[in-house]
Image (cartoon, rainbow, N blue to C red):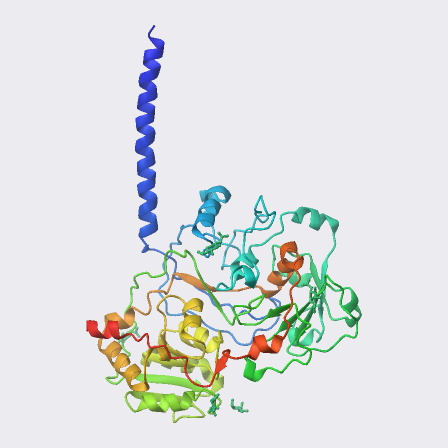
Length: 492
Ligand SMILES: *[C@@H]1O[C@H](CO)[C@@H](O)[C@H](O)[C@H]1NC(C)=O
Ligand SMILES: *[C@@H]1O[C@H](CO)[C@@H](O)[C@H](O)[C@H]1NC(C)=O
Ligand SMILES: *[C@@H]1O[C@H](CO)[C@@H](O)[C@H](O)[C@H]1NC(C)=O
Ligand SMILES: *[C@@H]1O[C@H](CO)[C@@H](O)[C@H](O)[C@H]1NC(C)=O
Ligand SMILES: *[C@@H]1O[C@H](CO)[C@@H](O)[C@H](O)[C@H]1NC(C)=O
């Protein structure tokens, strides 16, 4: 018979072709993983303040970001895995089973022009719990913001059809939050989970799902029921927030601290593709900024600060020209013309001292993100710990004062950068690789209230003051760890 023979041959050819294809695909994937430079990533970026307001309520200031960045027309089509922090095995499983290429090619909804909305949460078949990490105990190193933004309960259709809303009581009233009563906030923001409503009515203390306090705690006199959550919100750092009188009532906190339940940072950097963190820039950031001596600019309103930042600036000034703008220095630039000031800074200065007023864990404000990173000068930072900046910033985008043993050592390094444009420019390669995203605070609050896994395990702070301002949280000195950039300096 001819037929079986013919079929065998076919089979063989098929196997050979299949193997070749497999090897080819594996090769491609390998390349993709190792090659972390891609041309044509979009440099179009927009800043978002992560303030708490509704979209249509006034924001503190308008910040022009990246006005002088070259904008390339192409957008990256690189995949954007949802949970970078996941363990490798878990991550792989996720990519294989949850996404097809089509889904991976669009950015998540919280990016500018992002279109990918979350699917119902995936569950671990054995434990019946969601896979994504959303609460601090599950992943203390991450801020879990993107996981929260991409969370939808897996039975959300049911929940929605029931028509019940989770009630959030703003105990200090609507004023401090600058939001509207009702559900509109969640609908306007197009939150993936929007079945929540806001109320300032204190009578709802008996049945609200969440009672939210901003800065102050006022006892309601009503004992809370077991499924009710109390959350404390702080915007400022411990030095500028009040001691809480009843420190054991809060289940959740929301602050800029990474170990808060709902982290509310001043800004949140997110890569378009976590594997692409540096790209070649087609401009020289040092151009026209060479006035022989390096100058450092600084806008401050309060001269005395706990961390002695002014003293440090003066010390630095002994070794390098430091121009201090504002009330504490000789250079004038009024707040009302701040934009012009920053244009000058961008044009003339190579470095910007983004010194916070306090050295506290994770305390990184718009001084760094907006006045520093979103401009084209290199920020020199003081405030949070070096490791905090590392987790919150684009890769290689700033210099921390505690990387150096003294003001003189720092000045030496700045002189080196001043002489070496290539080295200086190496601090700008992150530009165009991501975006400061809107972290949609209210959307995340609503999502979290629908997360049975979070709500069903009782949690509260035994002493919220200790957590917030206990030992090691703030320091009036430096966090210094001498991981200086000496390696780089030897290279010259
Ligand atoms: C993830 O990895 C860490 C250490 O690498 C390990 O301790 C942890 O158990 C892992 N978690 C899961 C869910 O596999
Ligand atoms: C640098 O200065 C030159 C000459 O004044 C000017 O043409 C150019 O646009 C400047 N470049 C930048 C980036 O400011
Ligand atoms: C300046 O900072 C100091 C110390 O942090 C503080 O005591 C003082 O009230 C501040 N002054 C103003 C005007 O904010
Ligand atoms: C909230 O905190 C209280 C203690 O103040 C506790 O009894 C309760 O179980 C907590 N609830 C949840 C859902 O964690
Ligand atoms: C800094 O802290 C130390 C000990 O904690 C204290 O003795 C010192 O007075 C503080 N310095 C300032 C300027 O507050």
